[in-house]
Image (cartoon, helix red, strand yellow):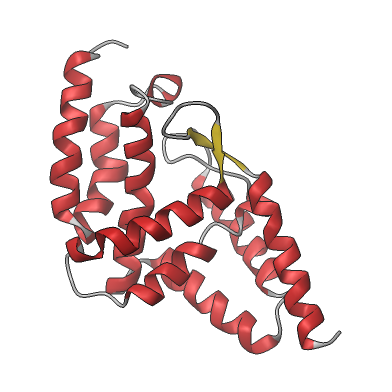
Length: 194
């Protein structure tokens, strides 16, 4: 297979991300978003919100991470942060998906994409920490924009939002969490038993 054929095969496979539905709805509540839309939207979030990163980041690297971070959902599906699933099992499926999907690329690109994906997953570098933060911000905003969105469906509590989302956002973009926390607190005050 030629280099171009391998690249086109990868890009055709990546198109399947558009068919992977997520738990989160669009901000207008009309339907669930797909993982392709999510990846684009959080890349835009990163561009717009980069000034709020806790530490300096290379925004081009952050955007690259965000554009590829959910490609594994082609095989693994969406696993919502508030869902009830076996995390070790999901990680194993996602690792296998990363091997398969990035393995479609020519070897040099496969290694580069996989390294970016691994860096995002590990969330140890400033770029990856900020990328993980932004990945958690967008669904919160969508749920707030839709009057709680899927929070009632998943029986999400304010404490869960703090432990599963807030901690990651605070680590990479604390000012964003402060702004969101005020909106979250207001929502839970108005919807104590939803």
